[in-house]
Image (cartoon, rainbow, N blue to C red; front, top):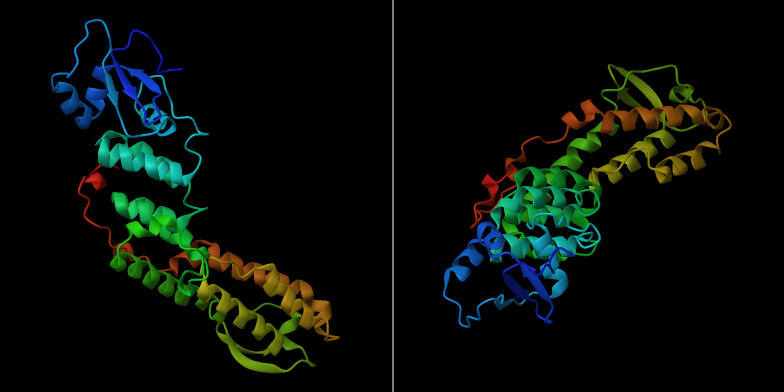
Length: 304
């Protein structure tokens, strides 16, 4: 173990009494907190015996903290595999012990949770002033029905100001409006698809590309459902199996449309490509200045 060498000249005692033997010089270099503390004369001076400094952290937490800095003691992935552990570790390293140099490593670790926990990452990134991570997390939050408040509130949300969270909701809403426009077909190139002219199904005259066409109502219902889905959480896909399933269920009832199911799939793929492709992404708001990041007391924004 990296913290039990007998030649080290300082002992950190965890809350439950576990000793971590470390070098004073390493801690003093890494942390202004320890540099000031270790510059004070010791209360008990026993020559040849390393002084013991009690800390409030438990042994697992203290082990994680030291591994972020100590030479030859890389952080154990199993120890920081949860966002809760990483949040607690960053809070202690950056705010209590002022080890600001670990901010880039902490940012990289936080970024790994962006896709799975975008709202939590957004809140923490705003707390630390990491604008690039906050922007990435805001985009991934488009997968959530954020404006419906039908998912649990993450603990990290307490670090987000009302102003910042309102900005995120506004961004989410604007993206929903922009993304749902994909279903309006103003960009679509008319092809030979048979379902454009079903003689049996109720139809409606709509604009498709530069033309006007009579589209079956069942296909228009698919587009309306897709627009509703995308508007509520713009990160969703118009190729959602539930959407296609509903449309297919209606198409098989028509003796003409049942033979054109493949065309619906092709169109859904086209919509998906438009939505998630480069052209589709350009439809989303690009003004990320609406995400207001707070002023950091530790000026972490400069440590990218």
